Image (cartoon, rainbow, N blue to C red; front, side):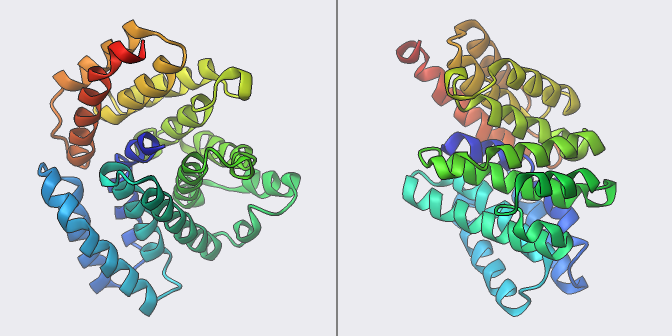
Length: 284
């Protein structure tokens, strides 16, 4: 499920800046600077080779301050993003996704105590506290939902993980209700992916997923190119719509990738678009 982690790379910038406000001033300055350098880099090879050192640094900072929601969420986001963008070994990607989800759960538990048992409590209790969330907790809920979706989709061959899909959808739906434009409409991207990674016969909702993708494009003003790549790969390929598939990917390749907070993810999107177009004849 490498594509879905790639999709959420585009969210790293805004998410990590928000996380940094919860850290000490020294750590915050370090995180801000390194994060900005990563998300605005136009050198994929340098980021691929250099980012692991930052991930190890985050692990070390967390070991010294294990109750910092900001550090935990920063590590969750970057582990997921790096796995999707640069890791090709499925086993390693799963390990990194597991680690990211663990960090996200620990951070959310510190910020929203009810979320500590989010995966095991009865569903009506889960939806109860989700419904009570207000705008002050939107970012925490969004980042937990993102990590949860990534974890589920990376474990798509595990029906135990698939069984948690309804909870992740409910959480992201609440984010949309509270602030649909949060992180450039990133919750719609997550919802679109979760509705289209399974065919309708297995519980997916492709047309609902299409609506989510289209809204994500609107809210990001088309600047977040990975939305279109994910739309093409998950929806267009699922329903065998070659025309839509190729149109979306050509639009990605023709777009200017450099945009504040999106440069790295857009370049990854263009790379992925080329790969998808190169296999289109074989797929369709």
